[in-house]
Structures are given as C-alpha cells and as structure tokens.
Image (cartoon, rainbow, N blue to C red; front, side, top):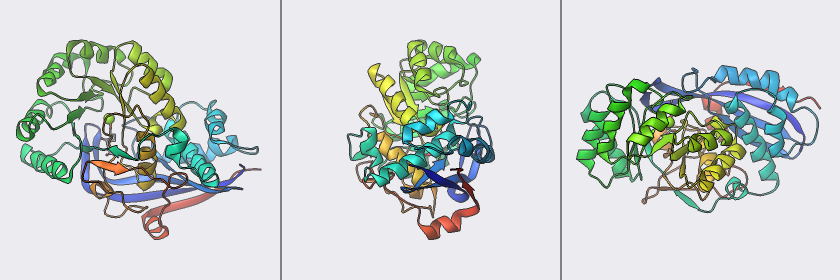
Length: 370
Ligand code: SMG
Ligand code: MG
C-alpha cells in the first residue's frame, strides 16, 4: 500500500457533562482525526492525546506537529503494511498516541481493502464485550450516588470512581453501602498519590474493590508493588504501562496483577495486542481503557476488547454518556451491560460527513512524498 497523504482534522465535541479527574476538568473533547488516503483506498484514525499534557506528556497540538514534521517524511515512498508503521517510526522517541493514530488509520485502510474486520485481524473471540463507566469527581455525595444509580440502571457492568486525596474513602464507602456488595466497583487515582499515602490507600481494602488503578506516578513501580504487598485488592496499572516490555517488567516486580490497555498509550493496536499477550502468558487479566474517544476510537477499542485476555469490563461506554452528537453513528449499551463489536471491514465505522463537518474546527491535507 502506498500513501498519497494524510488529512488531519481538529474536532471539538462538547461533553454531555464535565469530566473531572485528579488531572483536571474537561468540558469539551478536542481530538485529532486522521484520514489516510492510499492507492488502496482510505482509512480513519484518532489520536487520543488531550489538550494539555497532564495524563501523559503528549498533547494535541504537539501530536499534529509531530505527524506533520516527522511521521509523514518517515512514511514516504515504499510499500506499507500495518506493522511497517511502528517500524518506520521506531527511531522517533516517544509520541505513542500520535504514532498509534497513524497506525490505526493505516490498519483501517489496509483491512478495508482486504474486507477484514479489525477484531478478526487482532484475534478477537467475542462478538459482544462487557463494559463499564468511569465516574468523575463530583461536588458532593448526593450527586455521586445519583450518577452511579443512573449508570447502574442503564445496565453498566462495572462502576469506576475517580479518586484523589480528599475524595476517596468517603465516596467509595457511600457507593458500596448504597449499591451493595454485588456491584463491581473500582477506583482510579490517575497518579494523584505519593508513597507517603500508602497506609491511607490500604484502607480501600475494606470495600471489596475489583481493583485500584494507578495510585502513584507512572515511573514508581516500587510504590505500586509495596501497596500490592499490603492489600488484598488487585493493583491495576494504566499510565505506567507504555509497552509490552514495560508490562512484563511491572508484572515481574509485583507492581500490578491487572493491566488497563489503551492502544494510544502503548503506541498502537499491534503493541496493545502484545501487551495483552504478555499479560495473558502471566495470568494477568487485562481490560480496555478509555480516553473519551470519538466513535472511531470506540470502534477500535471494542475490536481490541474482544481478545481472550480482556476478562474485565472496559471503559467503553455508550456514546450518549459522552456526546450528544458524535462523528459516527452512536454506540449503544445492551441490556446485559455489553456492547457489540463492529463486524464491518477495518474499524467497521466511518465518520458521518455531516457530523464530522459540524465537529471540525480545522483541517489540513499533508501529501506523503512518493
Ligand atoms: O473514555 O470513558 C472514558 C474515560 C475513561 O477514566 C477514563 N479514562 O485514566 O483511565 C483513565 C482515564 C483517562 C482519561 S481522563 C484524564
Ligand atoms: Mg486510568
């Protein structure tokens, strides 16, 4: 496959409700949508970097600049297959979310031309996957309980509560007491705690959580291992796991017994599958994380989440939980807390031209030199 060019589009999608985490508050999801055009057709990708480099070092404008200045020249000329993307970009350090977006668009294009669904290409084994919802920090327990109630009534298979110092034991206790022991409940701190908080965090062990996600800094495997040794609740890593090699090392150090996999964070779907493989070989369950994706990323995440090692519900909620108007047809939640994995070729979805047009705030066409 030879690339003719890459279209970069900035899109802005207002969130139905603000999403607050220990990293900040988002009211609009600004995202970067990519369309690659090749001699075999076109394909779509999405970069999950955010406006500010708070979740990770990447940010949207940096990602666009990285693609324009470094990715396009590196992909010039030659016959391209999806695994070649990561290889062609391997000499460029960092920028996994930008690299992942490009690989995603090339994969979509390549698979469409071969009439193969991404889920099948990755080795998926399920047609529907269990999904949960991530509940941000809110003002007060009443609002929290109302929000959780609404999501449980919708049928979500798991509730994840965002926590931070000052918003942890109390909200978790309130949710557990109100909704009972059968509710699958997890917490995510997005690195908000320091090693000095270890004893405090260990008190979360009283609430029967399915996991505690990323309490400490990405590089601090040692504190995660220390907490894991102290509590019965499984420790799950998100920000720390940037590759299959990192996953293997974190497991070896006892820093996690569950992994949240996000293709953008690890540099693409193919590396995400390798993280899955490493975890599975060690008996470590994985689940698919979310980055408030548009319908494109949601389709890709569903394809990934149907691999056999994804045994816990993912952060892949229905479109209406995020956006009134997305750029693709909406994804809906089934009665049993599952969502359907797209079956069409590639991602199995394409942006609706009107919806995409309405969300686009800027676009540019970057030709790939022959
Ligand atoms: O897409 O439903 C979603 C969001 C899930 O909580 C979510 N993502 O750390 O797992 C995480 C966060 C990252 C994005 S908010 C900074
Ligand atoms: Mg997380």
